[in-house]
Image (cartoon, rainbow, N blue to C red; front, side, top):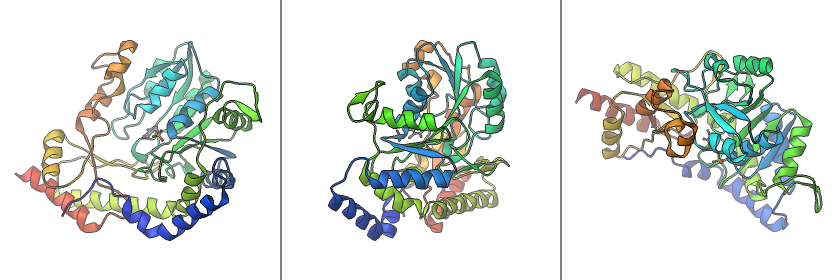
Length: 369
Ligand SMILES: Cc1ncc(COP(=O)(O)O)c(C=O)c1O
């Protein structure tokens, strides 16, 4: 039996009829860009995440980029973030002309360590981008406290964490802006690229709406430099169908994660299972274990037909593209250790029990051999 890291087909099978009807309706409507589905999805997601506004854009990366621009971040500014994230988090900082400043992560959650943020603040610091990695929220309370003390903006990168909760608040709803990704592998995944910005600030929402359509608020009158970054009407129609099932799917992910955790502890296997902080509702967009035997285990599981992935093998401060920032090996030891030890195992809502049992059995065999 093969166990893929991820299989999107069973989910499609489950909602095929609804999705195909929704797609057909859009095709027949002749309304393909910024039509009624985008507007409706924005309202539905704002309600789901409990924010006043949600603005659909072309990707999670653009959600971050347009958030930074709308909050006035640019040349000469420093933006604090984690080095242990997908590259998009940092690349948008560079693309708006600012400088990424990395802060090490917490050992348990893999998220930015709030206790280390203050020492990274300079007179140029303007914002913090916490990332809710793997679907587990960053510790937002101290982060918001620091932001208030130093008058910094907070942009939450919730690309991997739609539906996750921090003290009962939805990930992405706490900072000045929260960024969602609808990349197909995410908790709420489209059939292509897509993203959304959450905010409680009307001006921010309006600015992002202008930025996503070339900087215009009314036809062919431009007040700012903008982009073409719209969420497709077709994607929005598909996402509206899927949003109805999101909580059920997150619960299914959480059940798979619990089963993994139980099996690992009953087999007494020497791997560290994901941590869930008392303030968190983890969504397990990714189920990530830690082991010092990561490379050998990955190879072993691959040979047995079990898909795994390393998110992420090299922290950003050690990537060639960020050499100019002058960081060196050893600067962020927790992130560096994590990048040597993490291994993500198969997880998706429809993943069968016997497949999870097989994965754990094979990991047990590996450690016994
Ligand atoms: C943490 C993080 N930030 C940002 C992004 C970018 O999202 P997108 O792929 O929709 O541009 C991703 C997507 O993989 C991500 O995982």
